[in-house]
Image (cartoon, rainbow, N blue to C red; front, side, top):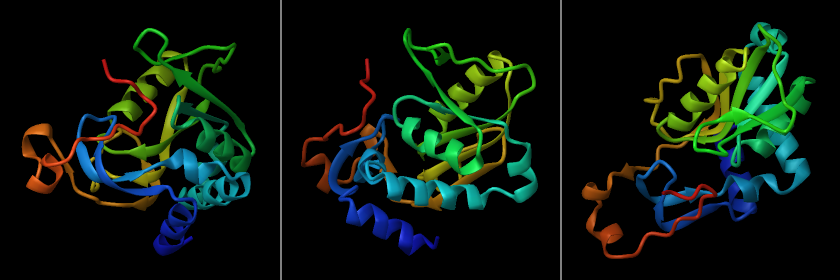
Length: 194
């Protein structure tokens, strides 16, 4: 799947938004990718997951025996990645602020895990999820995502395979350009900030 085809999927599902957005990373942007909208169509979600799986080298794909994603944003794409790779998919969540496996999910010592996100901006959530997976006995051999918004700066500590890199500028609260500063920020993501 080419970059323009991926963006067409986002546009078709009205998942590429423009305005002033406060991202879950705490940064601001004039663009927001609502992955939940692009993934709400099961056929589209399956196509996108197959395309992400195709970015992972074949020999590495053969090693993976579990997919783990962070809740909430990574749950759907993680499930579809499990289907695409023919392995079990589970997720970590933050009941007390720190990612952990719950709901009877468990990893066997040495499980080769692919950590899957919807969007990576700074990589913080991904690194936290990887830490939880390792604490549960898994070995994260790679990470994947629909979208890399980090401009290639996210260091996850493992090979990272995004479907597409979209480098819409993001800004710290004290760096906002005048056109963003003039409008209130909308927080469209699923994670509530404390």
